[in-house]
Length: 99
Image (tube, rainbow, N blue to C red; front, top):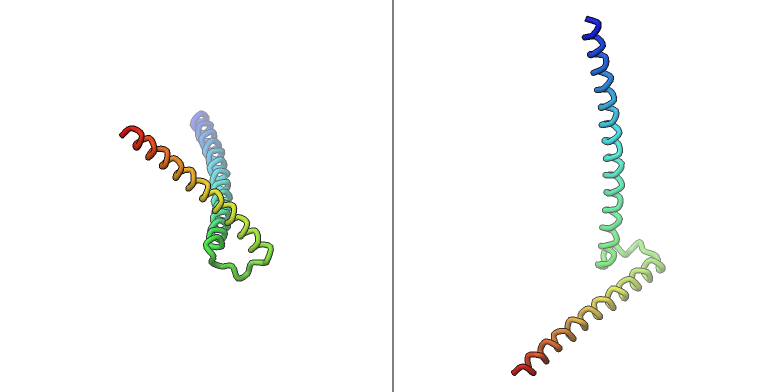
């Protein structure tokens, strides 16, 4: 009977430890989910602003930052577009030479 009681006590202790670990992991997952939701909301607001929506509460400085960010993005887009055009021109020149 004593051995059975000892096994029972050991099992309940192990279960208590496991439930504590699960509880800790659960709390960490909740915090991480909350942080991710906050980041997602921030990104959604930033996306809307870049698309021109929800600009009414923005200050002059925020609008200037948005404008600068859009100008940098446009520069990268134009550079990539020019690179693709140059590559297409080179391919077409090679085709013309082979004929």
